[in-house]
Image 1 (tube, chains in turn blue, brown):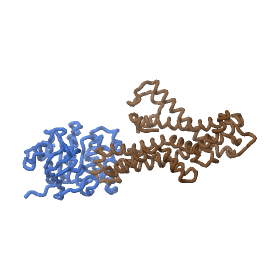
Image 2: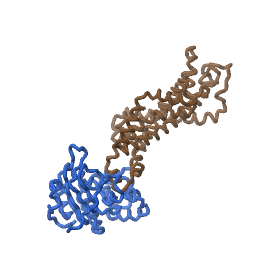
Image 3: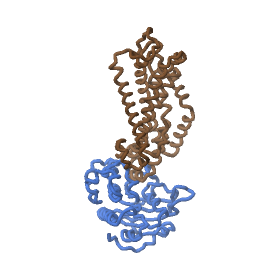
Image 4: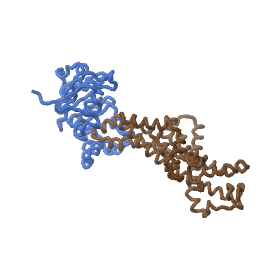
Length: 238
Length: 299
């Protein structure tokens, strides 16, 4: 009997218009410590599925289980402990960073929002080093840094509450190869240290094959065969 | 922030919305400078003249009634021989006070209502916005008259009536802004990071809408001054003995028919010039913070 999955999506249908859902009948599991790559062409609905998995979008139907417990409430209504179990990194760093916050406040914001101010200096310094942000960058605002630097800060923000599952929604799609390698390495270091699971969403077949323990294709997710279609892939060698 | 680039630097044309011709740019700079000078003179006059000039604006001198402008009385005198310059400055003082208080109160109410409607969404948003639509459909001067008629004449009822009828446009602007911000990924990131509704509103949404709300407040000051004048002119605003610009114009109506133009002209100019100057400054600020939305904020 395999251990209880960290994240399980069962027959999830979700979207922004009930008559034309972006995701139909998608099923996917992520075991604790496992890295799953979700491959699909752009516009197929994988970002919507990632938002459902991060408790940011209520699905029209289907079930989501976190640690075996079904999720019944979404966004603000979800219990804070459940929400912070999952960390998310979005595709576009420009849009996912509040333009008024300095990078250091951006990274520290989840700690402040959850009442853990005393951890701020230590965690920010630790994570800035882990994702490769120098102290002078930390004092800048989003418009004063490059996309790659901002995405590093967004990754640090996603990791600051030590989530047990990290969802990277096309995290490296906008970035060059060296930044991609650095961010993937930072994620892998974090996972090695904490044993966190990973759901990496993307369309870069080569990257996800090398990065993840297994990759599933969008068509398999929505046809209900992803639970068994374990594509062999090279163990993470990044 | 990039907003503090002075207008004098407009000649460098480094920012995209300053890419139109130099001629237009220079007229705008002149407008901003003239407006700033007029606002400065107004504020100084209102703050300094009453304490410095130890003159009684209510002093009646029936021997000097309705004198045309002269060195002794630059704006002439009214039908009770009171100095019009002094009364205009005192009137402006009251009008500005009403304008500022009303604009501030209206902006606070409008921002709170608009932000709550936008942030909560769903049925709360629909209910609040239908109330806003209903109130907007009533002519606001009429509603204002109704409100002042409930109280004794005074500064507070006038400010309340103007504020209570003018928060609607601010609420609309703030709600629209909040709705567009709500779906941004950085709000998703905050929710995922464990932020409460309150935290998202105070930390991310309100700071983003404040520039728009502050601009709406400044644009509302001249509008509120006009309303005060209109209510006083109709005899419903401030008590008749109080020097307010509306009262001055109202009491000068009879002498205008007799050919005495100065008791109407100078208070009228005191209504028009400062309000245009404030509107001119606010307009320049509006173009700076959001050049594509000139038409959205009504005056």
